[in-house]
Every structure is written in structure tokens, then in C-alpha cells.
Amino acid sequence: MCGIIAYTGHRPAVPVIIQGLKSLEYRGYDSAGLAFEHSGRLHLFRASGKLQALEHKLAGGQVLHATTGIGHTRWATHGLPNETNAHPHLDVHYNLALVHNGIIENFQQLKSLLMDKGCTFRSETDTEVLVCLIAHGLEHTDSIIEALSWSMSQVQGSYAFALISRQHPGRIWAARKASPLILGAGTGENFAASDIPAFLPYTRDVVFLEDDELVEMDAGNWTVYRAHSLTPVSKQVQRIKWDVQAAQKGGYRHFMLKEILEQPKVLMDCLAGRVDRKNNTINLSELQGLPVPSRLHIVACGTSFNAGLWGKYVLEGLAGIPVNVEIASEFRYRVLVEEPGTLYVSISQSGETADTLAGQRMVRERGLPVLGLCNVVGSSVARESDRVLYTQAGPEISVASTKAMCSQLVMLYLLALYWGHAKDRIDSRTVRRAVTDLYSLPAMMEAQLPRIQTMAQKLCAQYARARSFFYLGRGINFPLALEGALKLKEISYIHAQGYAAGELKHGPIALIDNELPTFALALNNDLLGKIQSNLMEIKARNGPIIALTNPETVLDVNDRWEIPWLEDPLNSFLVLPALQLFAYEMAVYLGKDVDQPRNLAKSVTVE
Ligand code: AGP
Image 1 (tube, rainbow, N blue to C red):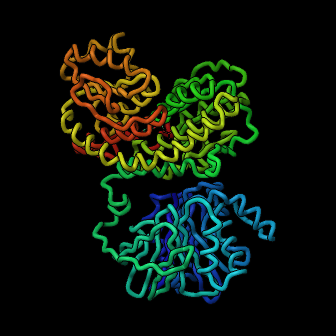
Image 2 (image 1 turned 60 degrees about the vertical axis):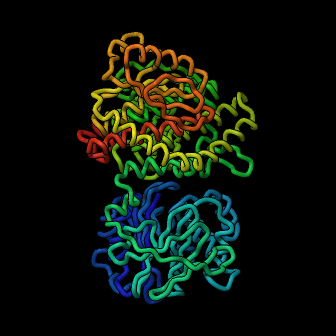
Image 3 (image 1 turned 30 degrees about the vertical axis):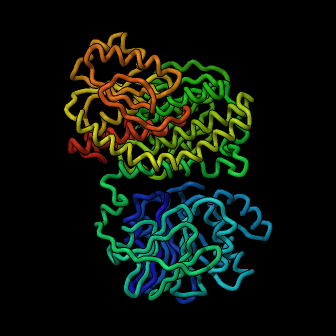
């Protein structure tokens, strides 16, 4: 996820753009840039690293007179976070400058077509392909807006972009598809941005663009069109009452809630560029030429470890590959017994966790292969892996990891399908059905999340005085029980222990009494009967039970929490947000600092 802003009006454009990028930094911060038009030329400034690196480049420059420009703060998805790949990108003749947020899924095909027509490229980005496509479109249309309409009909994927042209001073074009873009309608000035905070200090009048809408604007006017027919669309101007801080969270109270509720979109973004929607096949180009591993050894910490343990069940079940999953801080200090054909997998949202990185370096020193599964492009784990799969979840601001785990599960499931098919353990029809089901998941999640949040609010009030919780699960739900317990501990400070339900009678059941509630994952799968027995043992000792379950299961518990049944492993994508929201609502109920819990850091870069 990146942040874009465009401005045209009576003020100096550069300070407005820098201010706007600062308020969008939560959307991405590995490089930044801006471009403006002045005296018939496009001026471009870009820098890798934080925004202040760009500000240093601009300091003292002759930039204050420009009144039209575009800016971008990047969260890399294609190409490393360096200056060459930073936005804005210009076409080969320096007539157009463009900033973009999203993923152009068919950018490789478009790039080849444009190169066949003599286009050259300076960066690895999909964005540069887009601006060159628009320039190519201009060669056979009469106006920029027609070139944009044609270009958008060629592109597959998601985008929100803003464009300026050397030949059209004072004018800006912007469009969106599946990535946010909002108009700020000022007095004698107009804005377009990924999010409202970017221009809130200047105007509270906003126009929300819909998918496949295109806007043309200058300082005094703006017109919205349907992108493909170029028919004008009348839009309602709305007045925003939020403050800037609230606006950065999209109006949500905490980043954690925003990131939990973003998971449907994260799931789609994970699939972007990895699934061929036409025939529903999986294409993990990042693994090109990598042999199917005979064993996997997953190394991670915290939530990423829980994701890896979930992956074990899916990878062994679908791909028939034996999987070891190990906590990095243990792995790195034990004697490594090498097993031929093993692929080591580092799972890390930040890509900077010291223990995970140390374990990976130990493996690499022996010349053994490492696959990184990371969210931060260009992070240490990513750079030091032989191959890397980016989870494309966008920046995760809240210390408690939520949407990153959702994206890790998606990638592990895709890997299981991909390798299972490569080994002829699952046929193309099964893969197609699985991919179809995956694509239907975001809509189901969107529909269910409000109900799940309401139930979480109800139950946390009932159980807020608990001094500890058991979280129980079996099979694929055991790692999720561990994750539910971790979430509750780290943000509500209530002790919780995730346990394999079958282990209860081997000691822990001694703890059960009427003051120690159990949160049981009693989903309707082949292990339900076993869970039912465990819950009867708890009930017999007066232990209160919350059961997260599916309709029609027969359970004797204190609180049933029903979510729709989906065939495993897809049910996990409803179980996970329920666990996250229960912990979130508990922390809110208890008045805790949800986004920055005490004693915790977002990335544990120390041992
Ligand atoms: C999860 O909510 C925690 N913030 C923590 O356990 C985290 O998952 C762990 O530190 C690993 O971080 P990583 O994924 O960035 O390596």
C-alpha cells in the first residue's frame, strides 16, 4: 500500500505535497518522491528511505513557485525500495509524470509489448509501465483523458494514480480501480489523494471516487468521468468532521481495528499477480526453477511461528511434504542436523526479527536454501533469502500482528496447492476449485466481520474479570488457539495459554475451575467429536466455556459463538478475525493502549 497526493491551486505545491506525504507515511515509508511542472518542464525529486531524505534533496531548491504537482510515499511491491524505483515515474520523453498505488497484475505482458514498440525502462516497477502505456496511448488518441481511458482498458489489477503533463500546466488527472482515491475540493485549489489526512488541513470537502472513475481537474474545476465511456458522472461533495489523527486510521479508533478489518482486501492483494484468474491456476513466479522440496523447515517467532505451524497442517495435508516448525530463538542455538532436500522457510512480517534472521544466517552459512516469507520489501530476511515471497499486506502499524498473519496463511495455502499440484497429489480441478473458493472469501469475510465484532464486544464484557484463559484447538485450529492466546496476552494483559485440546488431561485440567474460562475452537470438522469430549471434561469441573463453532454443532457450553461453516482450511479465515477481535474488544473494554501495548515493539530486532 502506498500513499499518493496531487495538488493544483494557488499555493506553492511542494510544501502542500510534503505535508500531505507526511500524513500518508503510515501507508508506506521506504522511499518517496514528487514531481511538479514549471515553465514547460517537469521537475522530479526522489529519495529512498524516510520522507526527510526527500526534504533534504528539496532544501534550497527553486521549488516554491510551482503550484501543480504530485507526490508519493512508497511501500514497495515490485522492485526494491531505492531511488530508481521510487515514484513519480516519467515516460521516456519526460512529458508525463505519474504516481501510483496498487498492483498492475499484467505489467510484464504490457512491458514486453511496449518494449517491442521501442520503449525503454529505467526501473523494475509496474508503475513505469503504466506511465509509458499512457504515453503510448497518447500517440493514437486526441487527448490525455482519451489516452487514460484506453490505458485503463488494457490494465488488469488495482490502481489509484495521479498524472501531470508538461504540455498542460495546472492540470491533473487521477483515476482509481480497487485502490482508494479521494478528491479534496478546495476554494481555488483541488487535491486528489489516497486518504483524507493528506489534504484535511486545506479542505474538509471531499468526493469519494468509485472504481473505474477518472477525474480531470485544475485549480478551479474538477470533472469526474466513467473511465471507459468518458461520460461525466455527477458526484456528491461530503463534509469530513474527523481530525487528522482519526483520519489516518480511516476513521477507526485504532490501527489494529483498521488492520483487522482490512483482511478481506489483504487476501485479494496476496493473490494479485499469483493467480491467473482466467483459468484459476497458481503462478508463483518467485519460485521459478526451484525444485519441489522434499522437506520443509519453518523458522519464525510469535505470530509468524503460529502461522508457520498452521502451514504445517496444510502443506503436509495437500502437498505431502514433511514440515518441521521451530521457534527461531531455539533453532538458532541448537545443533543443526541437516536433512537432504530440506528447504528452510523464514516467516517474518518485518523481515528484521533478530532471532529469525540469525537462524536464517546459520542455515545460509552452510549453503542451505532459504525461502523468505516477508511483508516488508527489501528487509534483511528478504534480501538474505535465496527466494522471497512477499505477502503484500501493506504496512502493519499496530504492534499486534493481525493482517500480516492472514496474508501469511494465504501464502502458505498457495504454496501447499502449488507444490501439491507439482507433485501430482492434487489435480488441476482441485486447484481451480480452491482458487475459486479463495476468491469468494473476501466477500464472505466483509459480510461476517461486523457480526463477529458485535459478538466479540458482547463476550468480552462478560469475561473481562477473568485472570486467565485456556485457548483450545485441535488439528489446524491448534495453531489458531496459540494465536488467540497470544493476541489476548499482548494487548489486554490477561494471561492466556493456547493448548492442544487433547493435551488437557495430561496435567492442565487440574487448573480448571469456575474462574478459569476456556475459549474453545470447536469447528465442524473431523475432530469435532474429540473437542466435544474435551469440553465435557471441562464442563464437569465447572469451567466456563466460550465455543467458537459452526451452526448445528451440538455443544453444552456457556457461550456459543457461531460463524459460517467453510471447508478447512478456509474456515481459518473467519476463526482468525474472531480471535483477533475478541482480544481487541477486551483490550478496549479494559482501557489498554491497543496499538502500542506496554513492553512490546513492532519488530524485535534485539535478542
Ligand atoms: C505478534 O502480534 C507480535 N507482535 C509478535 O509476536 C511478532 O509476531 C513477532 O515478533 C514476529 O515478528 P515478525 O513477523 O516481524 O518476525
